Image 1 (tube, rainbow, N blue to C red):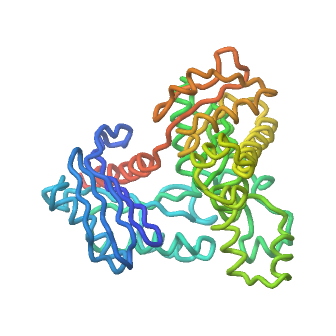
Image 2 (cartoon, rainbow, N blue to C red):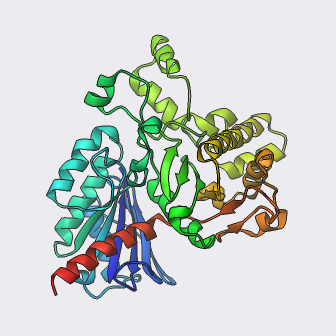
Length: 408
């Protein structure tokens, strides 16, 4: 079956087409095409790749409906065409950020689910509306396909109340849904399943600390294959030091800055887009730039790197105690998969827990999975590349297969 995965942002549409080899979606041996349409609503550009062929062109995409149309056109026309007809697409998997407390698994994107996504838009105002626009546009363009929504928050709905409840007035939780939700759940779920496979352990018997480290960063404590704690909170601002997000800070800082004359918009912009590595270094939110600057003697860049690593190590320590036994710490995301110096710093910081770096393994792993600690380490640290699109395709294939069985 052919599964198209779509990730609609506020001004972009990322996509990947999969050929799924079996009805359970367990094997995805071939990715015929992938790409991204940038600057929806402006001077839009489509970057489309299919095998050796590339198709880069300006397109007319004033809204997400037009953007989805341009993506589908690239799949059947032009240098990167891989389909004869659009009706050969069996399913469309949609990444959706927030399902609130209403959704605990991937679900068919029907009218009822559409209302749930809309209702939870206040919890993710920058993400759910464009996610919903993408679903509407794709359902209109591909009415015969099975459309499935896969939620970032779904894997994290297993957090117990002691982990997700804040110590705030009860009415805040009951009336305004103030609680920890967590994000990057699809990535954490993928690396949990993949790491259990690599360790040759049943998922239900696997305890992990998964670390999604990129421009956005989050960590999850996984007990028996299920999430039991997570670093992000009600929004993606909480937790680790990120590229431009502050991570955890005293909530009174917000009140203080409001009292100093900043308005809500300015504070929100500062914490989301002007903080994190960018603020600490004063120069960049890219770990590669900061490591190079640190090595050249830039003290602020060194501080940014040190703060980033320190926060990761601190969370590992907390989650290690909460889990009591840990099969592996798993690094993924752009930094976790590719930054040899950052990984070295994290493993060195975990030495008191028994992690011992294997320098050769750390230096050789780029884009592949494997342990970067020695066999003698009592705490094992692994690098496992994430694949959120694969996870979405697999979930979607499950629903397509079910519908096909019903129609036989």
